[in-house]
Length: 560
Ligand code: CTP
Ligand code: MG
Image 1 (cartoon, rainbow, N blue to C red):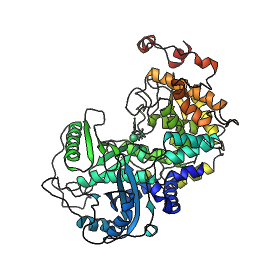
Image 2: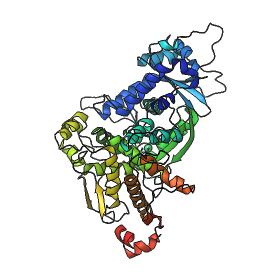
Image 3: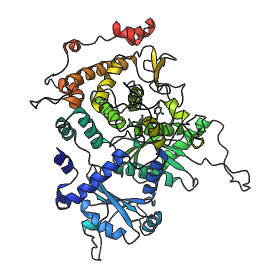
Image 4: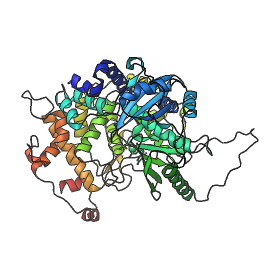
């Protein structure tokens, strides 16, 4: 299985360089999965931003262009690493990371346009490598290229993945493999930070201090390969100090802040559409609670959601990052639950009345705050109480985002607590069991206290937003979807309990594969291998309106 997993990283033409490339690919993957070495979220963000500023993206003919591109780039600076990736087409690209930002200025200064009458002559770190003419080709032997990664965005097919999971030793092992193979890789992070940098640089003329902050699954450490990029733009937040006497002339803001944001977003949408290479399928969704511009960056293969007034979402991502760092079981557990939810059709990429990945993640974290015999992660109130003066953050919208940000301090605190030593697979099973019996009808989920609290207002599923406690993160979830969620929790608990061990006879699905793949197999009319007799009875559907009129809670519905 291991050999097969490794072979997956290497394209057939590169077999002779197999061991080196393989080692590089494995190294970069491991670094990302462990997110090792970062002492805080801020450090991780700054490292990724700095990598992006020192990088260019070059479209090439194939991975075989790497040696020539390397030699060409070495004229302008020190090449630190090269990361090749492919996008459907197939088209080939290489991220070339230089030692210094000046090297990138140097490269861009020595790059040019073809036929300015035919194109919008934008200069940016997105380039293509034309075939060398006249001069002899310069090539560096592959073995001399530092940190070369080939096909870094090559994620396993579902068939491959499930065959590796099938051959794993235990469900815990399956969860670790799933996490390793499907988490956002360091190349995935690079592509997303380069996409963010493009929009930042495009607006940096009038706003030299602009920052495009990635948030959501790109940075919260729960991201998968191919996850979208959520971005928030902050134009400039520094006010003049009292002894500063020269003040910039500037236009007055519109009195209606929302109208202003909508107008700005509209203009930014136009800039993306008209000027920025690779930005395609630009959609302006300006009437939403948070106005956004959506687009696809075709040179990095990243789907982007851009907003301007959502800084608290960045701190929410930081909170998830901190909680994900507390214990090495947190991320594989979240990944397993997110994969299961996707496979059984509980989540859906389009927004709607179903649970989102974000809400699901909060459900897992809440469970880990009260797992037995001891919690795996601390409550949010604990993180607040541990905050230092430097951790105090209040956004311009007045949201208090103060909590401890030093990962070592949180780990140290947990080390002093009674330790939870449950296996990953036991945590997964107990997670399903916990929510099978959770009283969603009258209780809300509060990560602040780490305990269920009475529901502040009517909603099928109530998850208190830890940063803005008056808001329900899962307000969108309908009663029907909640009921589906409960049924699936129960199905998964039963199936996992029954099929937690690898069958000695081979053949049969087991563990994670059983809980993820069973509904699909059933739909295809294949062997239904685990559903206990009780569940074959189809749950009765109720008219939701009728239930609201009767003012029943979920528990009542269930009983009825
Ligand atoms: N967010 C929030 N409150 C909500 C919804 C979202 O604070 N009610 C923030 C969270 O930080 C979340 C981010 O916005 O992580 C992005 O939301 P979304 O893209 O829906 O979730 P992701 O975590 O990015 O997951 P996915 O991989 O499905 O994109
Ligand atoms: Mg997202």
